[in-house]
Length: 418
Image (cartoon, rainbow, N blue to C red):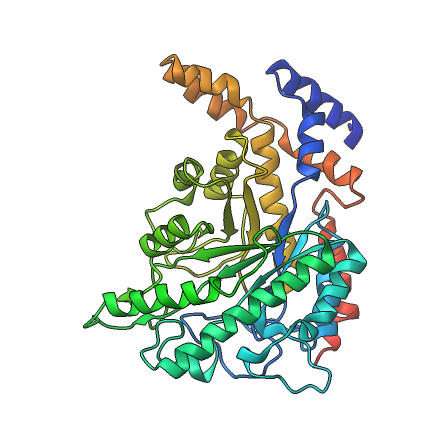
């Protein structure tokens, strides 16, 4: 039986035959950070104790061992990162502030000091931080946030957005890397609205006020995320794809596409190159929608692969900011993190091991028969052997035996959380 090193050498030679340098692919993949979302570890509960999830969001399942405290959540994230090759980032929601006396402040009054422990966590591990205002799961979000017709409530949420920009500046200062701050709101209607324009105009005005607070655009990369619909928001969402993209384009901020936030027949992989024509940088939330925006764990499926192919073949690894976004309480939550993050990396590696210039030449010459043949044959090339080599060089288990570490952690740690 061949050793892992021997399998890699054979794979390296086979890829070289089609003009692909596996060493270059491994080196490039190591340089690509993915922002891992903190909310997978506790089912999007956060540390405010505001009750059930609202805003069209739902977490299903009762798998034991969810993180209950900041310490447990960070411990679980450490375990996940120990099984994910490379150096990455963390993505934190505003509802995850850590308060010294255990008493949260209003969301319009959150400050950098409430996220000091997150900054310390990141700095100790050499990670960057990204941030998100939390416009859901709150009593004042029942009838809308940045679109609310009640001006006092809308002002509350505008103050929240400005507070989040200040916290994002703090994270950038502390970590030495820019902080991406993503704005998404669930504002919409369960049934047919009487007025679609009014909420959108209020949303536009709210965003203008938030961005008008004055901030360092080199340190804080503001993005705007759209959504097609959610539970209780089936008929209308103010922040549709058309609204979000138009706003980002006219205001000079980054568009963010979540591949679960579109109609089921729409593919974000097809949209990436369109946005790259007009935007210096864009951002992606990589997820997996099953029939609707269900935020299933990312897998090495066709759309994940196709999205990463679009990023790589367009030489856009430095223009596309990657993050994961899903939450599943029906399986081991740490395994969910690891499976999703590694799946994105596997898709990136597969794209890096593709002879893109040669395939493009076949397309441009009209040789579509050979193009299809080569695309299909590439699916059986030994990408798995290159993946294991990448993991080995990064001190991480490359094959499925990493799951034993999860099982041990579940026995020793998670099972004791009652």
